[in-house]
Length: 104
Image 1 (cartoon, helix red, strand yellow):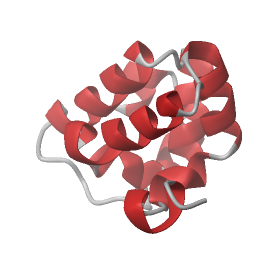
Image 2: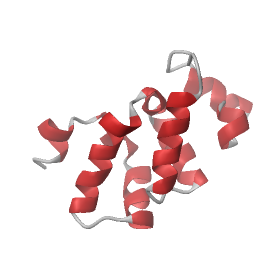
Image 3: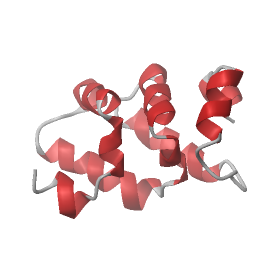
Image 4: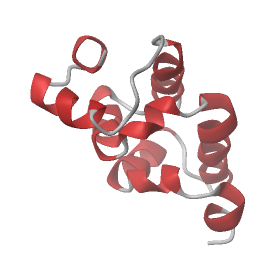
């Protein structure tokens, strides 16, 4: 999936996939990638996020990632600006929305 869909090298895909459980179907990763693309992330930024936080592919895009992205939009970050910030600090996706992102 990582090689064919996102252009990862075999080495990058091996490293990233070693940090997540195998997917039963590409539905979840596809929804995450789609959300990131429609939020202004380019392929390079998506790849950077997944390399740093591969488990993001197992997240529920609508329930887990979308609210976090919307919190940043509420602060005025949109499109490429939002993608730039998240791709530099992708571990923000590991933080709790109510416990960390919103209070800080």
